[in-house]
Image 1 (spheres, rainbow, N blue to C red):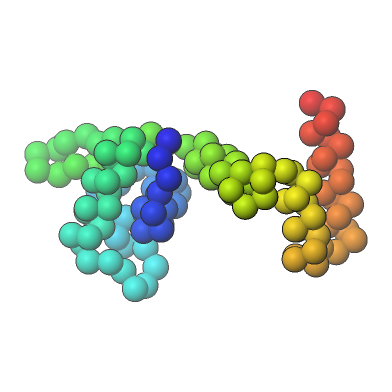
Image 2: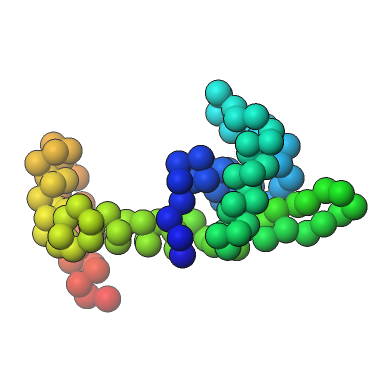
Length: 121
């Protein structure tokens, strides 16, 4: 699975919410400032080439639909962040979160519970 550039990720976030649509549907759901229609159409074609979207043709209109689930992309992206920025160490990630995010005691307890549950699975 290829990495997405920011404008591709933005379009995919809309697709993950609506699951399918034509270019105009996606454009209408993007935040301001909206890209030009042709720019978005090119972005969607790029997403299709990368295997994130498929399409059905109705006359001259293409309806695009999701092929890669958001959870699969999040997992790959997060694993890449851990590898590239934290030397592949979950300990380094947790240390960063504790130091930089100023986690509350409650958040730390919840994190600890998640870790304990994950270790038992």
